[in-house]
Image (cartoon, rainbow, N blue to C red; front, top):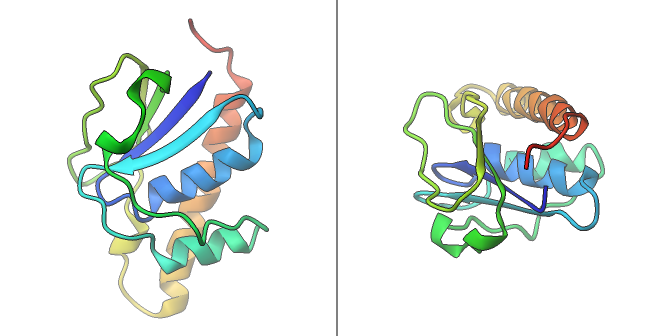
Length: 137
């Protein structure tokens, strides 16, 4: 892998969590981005649950798919579950990890954080498996 792009709609929660987690564990020569079809802003809950792991994404911003250097991306991972995922037109291996949007969870602040933690932990597991798998040319 040379470049990984995590995609969702708002680029505010799932894809931001995935970008932060992946940047912490991929080899130094692998670039990592996240983007969305309708970017908004990074959810404070995403910042908080990664901070619990010692990862700081407080300087991250939501980005549009068009802002990503398509020629540097060789793996695209879409994270949408209940909504329509954005399309990436570049040439890349495509994976789909349909995960519910933790930003859609209502309830107490702790319930919301628990949803973000569950998503974080699942992304962490999947990213670990991705890095263990042999890469296809």
